Amino acid sequence: MPALELKTVKIEKPEDMNFILGQTHFIKSVEDIYEAIMNSVPGAKFGIGFCEASGDCLVRVEGNDEELKELAKKNALAIGAGHSFIVFMRNCYPINILNAIKSLPEVCGIFCASANPVDVVIAENGQGRGIMGVIDGFVPKGIEDAKNAQCRKEFLRKIGYKLG
Image 1 (tube, rainbow, N blue to C red):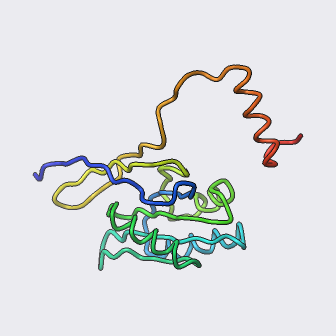
Image 2: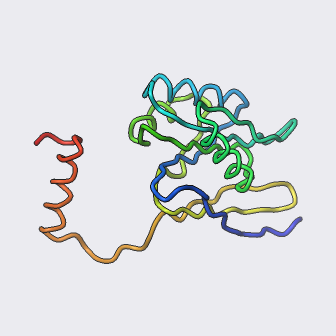
Image 3: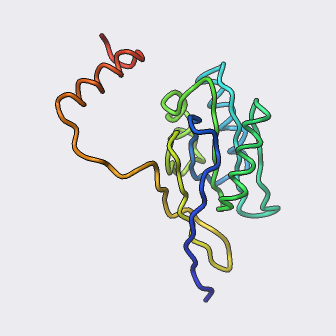
């Protein structure tokens, strides 16, 4: 039995760019994810990378922005875990498209949706690679107090996510 090796792969992206990392199970996923994003936020710019786990075992790439498609291709190849996908986006946020992607019949799950620095924890053996989880952002520095809670509530109202 081949040894199991754990490693991390850092997501390479601009500091403020959001992305979604997930797992799916079918080659048509890239087209279905494309349609789900376009139907959710027609003005969104995005790139999708999908790691095929059988047959040709290629990184499949779709999107409507060449820079984001390149970013998706580069990161999907670096992760290299079968049936994983990654979406980079502009002019929208994960909250705008996540439910549409999660509702696709072939999407098995989402590992993260973030703009934070993220390391993907990968397990590799002689057969292939799998995503064990992610390290998303940083360790908490304390517990929210009343002032922090008020700032959070004001921020959500400022950006239009809660009624003022």
